[in-house]
Amino acid sequence: IKTVFAGSSCNDIVCTEQCVMSGHFDKKIRFWDIRTESIVKELELFGRITALDLNSERTELLTCSRDDLLKIIDLRVSAVKQTFSAQGFKCGSDWTRVVFSPDGNYVAAGSADGALYVWNVLTGKLERTLAKHH
Image (cartoon, rainbow, N blue to C red; front, side):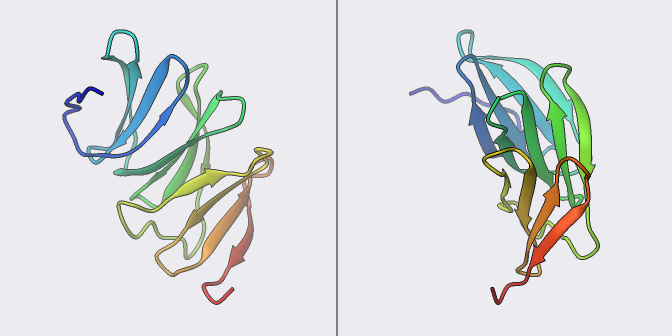
């Protein structure tokens, strides 16, 4: 086990065989090379990063941030591929989670209002809101 100083509080991490991706309070996603234990790339978003998830192919990174947006980043080109938002959705804390569905067709995140918001990846539209009483 090794501790590496990242320069900002880390709210979430995901890993592949060669890379660790970390989401930070300073709005940056850092890409770490496991072998060299160093940052090889940084990508800055517009809000503090609260959560990360990888699709099953490990080619896309899903992010949630305090600007109330979910984003899919294409890891092959290190660029935002898609952005999700919805009326009423609010990333209410630094521990708000986000997830791809197992088939990669949907993304979901919990909101400050207690509801679960589910978006269709193909259309980019909000598919469903599951209220907190469900």
